[in-house]
Image 1 (cartoon, rainbow over the protein chains, first blue to last red):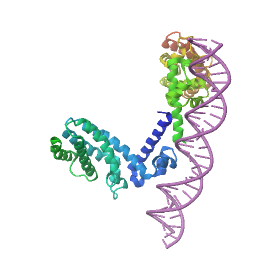
Image 2: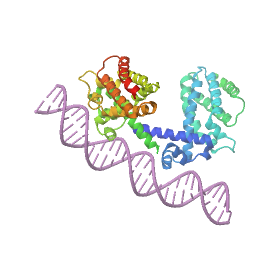
Image 3: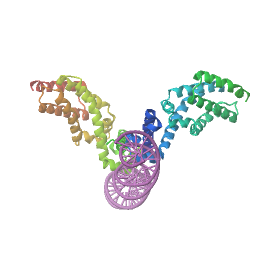
Image 4: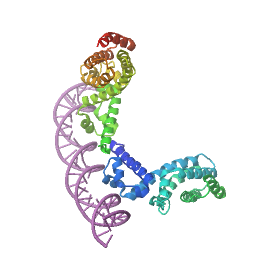
Length: 192
Length: 192
DNA sequence: TCCTTCTGTCTGTGCACTTGACATCTGGGA
DNA sequence: TCCCAGATGTCAAGTGCACAGACAGAAGGA
């Protein structure tokens, strides 16, 4: 069940994603070349299509992996505080700080009329939201014993959307935004 | 020329060698099971045969890799001294010390009437000698400018055989043996 | 003596990657 | 305006590699 072939398949996918990641960071979605991803990985162009379907599939896969990594970090911030409100504040601040340094996000939101990749954070943001919910809801339901599950999910959803909005369209500094959101949502969580 | 498939093939071989190495260290040549090597690597038994031909081929391949690694270290000792005699002494001492700690050698020479693997150091020692010559002659010809190439090779050959003999059948302590050989070969090298 | 276990070999099968060709679209230049 | 270069996406045929499964033969143990 963990054959050499399985590991090889996983490794191939990872290396393709690495190559695609580099290409996107360097030149955005438009600068991404299917043939180049294959060449850099030492594999044919067709193999890239076999793995991801089409070019948009490559971008989605890269974004999904990046989102997972992102969330590991954000979740850690959330876990560092027993108090829900405090955890929320820390997680939001961490997320905004991470986002501002993230090469992929920077490439997606880079100046030239905004890259098509930016749609993953806006009009096609479904995947990011769902992945984030999967990761965060699980944690929140387990560690916020005093908050009803539905309320916790609602809270996560609102915070998520606000954070996403600030990533695409920055407002105040991360710490300020985090404090703001925590203050607004605090009473709701306390009354639950 | 460095396709993903090529890298995968190399990796497969390395992992097979790792599994075989562990098996030999644990149970000697007799304890080595072709099926187990495949299983541990996540590959079929047939694939092990495809890669190495037969069981003896596995042992040879493991020994060859180990020999190469061994020689990197010995060569380094040789390179640490500009003076041929001093280099020879250091290399011999290093080789004997490494050998006494080497798990593979220990397994091959372990008590039970000596494992079949020990033949690689005795009656079937050709491969080890040739590999060693390849590595050491090149270095010696380059770094011993005052010694004729043929004399250098002769010297390496004699030292090699003495060292091999001491590995199989230990005599005095490494430092003593090294000093001995260096003293005996010194005049020959100096007269060249 | 039977039974188990391991080596070594062979055959056919399936999968994944490759190759090469092709239709289509788009932007740039003569 | 026309043409062409370069890109995406699709397809079919070819190929290499590992796998499954079976078998013979040797060795060792109950």
